[in-house]
Image (cartoon, rainbow, N blue to C red; front, side):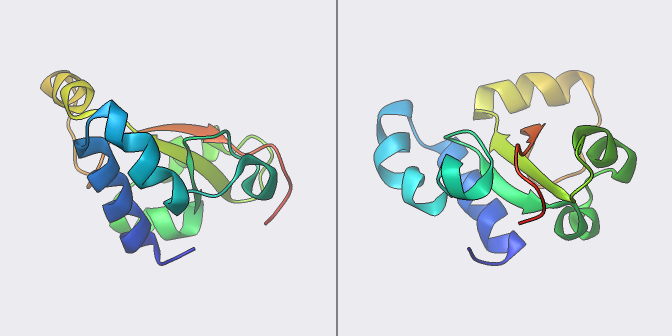
Length: 106
């Protein structure tokens, strides 16, 4: 699965690629939906590993509906991140679309 920094950097690399290359290059780094509880295209993270790199505890708690400490994140495209950061303070390495996993503690 790799360390959180490796997975965030992988997500950053995937976000920077074009959509056609995204599927062939980035899919192997992601867990399959059946094993992670995350939809296809999402990376699996624990909230504990995201906190030290700047993700907000209250936000992650709100995303983690089932309370198992596991969330799914998918990087926004570079254009989406640029648009988002134009109107929000962006202090994390990558802006992601977060959702809760649909399984228990992994």
